[in-house]
Length: 570
Ligand code: ADP
Ligand code: MG
Image 1: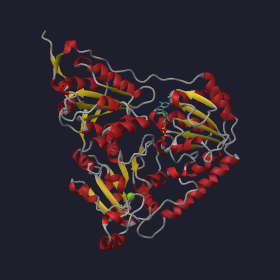
Image 2: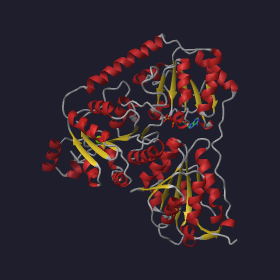
Image 3: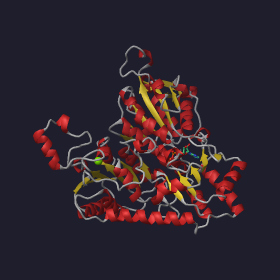
Image 4: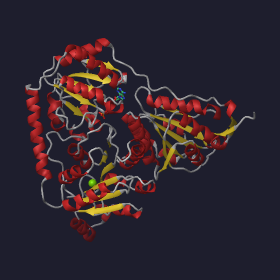
């Protein structure tokens, strides 16, 4: 039988499919167009985006949501460079991702080829692996290694560089080193003595606190984590993206007393979260000097960062939580629900919730953040996937909008990246369409955050993804100007020297971007208009929509004991 020829593009597509890759996001052009076409032919879903950065964010969100990396496909030089933010964001969030970049033809290298750039070298800083296959024959093996590396251990991004001349080059199938799908990540468990030490520390605690991080969400540990909370009666606090691992309305959730819980806990069980800026490094004054931290993580190098832990449990969160469950079942220990610590926490929760309620019910116009989120909470589906970014929009939204299911909140994350929202929403909608049909994606954006990738609205409409985007519009970054002040500047000032750097155009009609592409756009200024627009958007399960909500440009967060998430105040 004659040997069949296969092109580089086909080899890449088939190798990705062999590794069970389902989704590819990108922008085609020389030299990668044929790769996208071959990917579709191999059964991979391809979503053409408008900016490589958003494509890369989308692919990384697939990795977080499904546990298998999405692929971002880009052209050489500038196309590749636009993915740096996405690769860094994925690696810093510990999410698996594969980026495939076309590059110059091999025989033009160093000659000033079209869009020539040292991509493999540049990729090293952002990726667990940055490689270029040396021949067509090894492409499947390189792709297997990249997919495996992205998922094993602490997940992260991997970059594969494809010389332009590889794409249409052909080889005989018989000479190709075909590679089977890599095995699922091996599951590691903590050493027995560490489990028993951790349990002893927890059992002696007076004021324990369980912190659930997005590692717990990523590892699908929700059932075991919930059992642990229930069995041990522990107060718990989710980090922003771990909301929903245990539902926010669980009676042991102390999110509304966050600062106090962190500040006074004597034992903290850290389940898949790093003691970085989000958790104030685990240091005073946000924590007790003598707090005992029990760290559970898949990455050994993480253990001991910033604090000297009382116990370290190295392993997969789901498996280690199971070990803890066994240990506590044996000990039949439960933290008493009538302790002084619980009483203090409950009192604080009540007070804080009342303060938010007061702000939410304010009738004055323009609306404040709390009023807007109050209505959103009342009207969006309970099981929707929430994507959120912006400054106050994200921070206040996090406290006001509950999550009831795991992996249903995506936000600016560990890297604090603005501009991720639309890419994440597109990825979530693609995954939801395949896995949980009918589940809606609600993407709540500050007006500034929306601007980073606003043209992806066209992508949303092109693929007919019924995403509901809500732009919480305060005319600026952090704060903005009202229309009158703007008029004054126009009359008397030089725009470039007088417009505050935080300002964006007042009353910008972002909803028209949505209607321009066939979706529904709403411009709302009052609670009634907001309610009507929300009801209509939620009821229409087929059409993408954008609600542009005008709020008071000077609206702020309620006063914080410790202003959170502002670096200067750490
Ligand atoms: P958060 O933003 O919620 O605080 P981080 O991203 O800081 O969470 O931390 C997540 C942690 O989870 C990382 O240190 C990562 O190594 C860890 N992790 C990821 N997957 C697993 C897993 N399967 N088992 C254990 N730890 C994991
Ligand atoms: Mg804003």
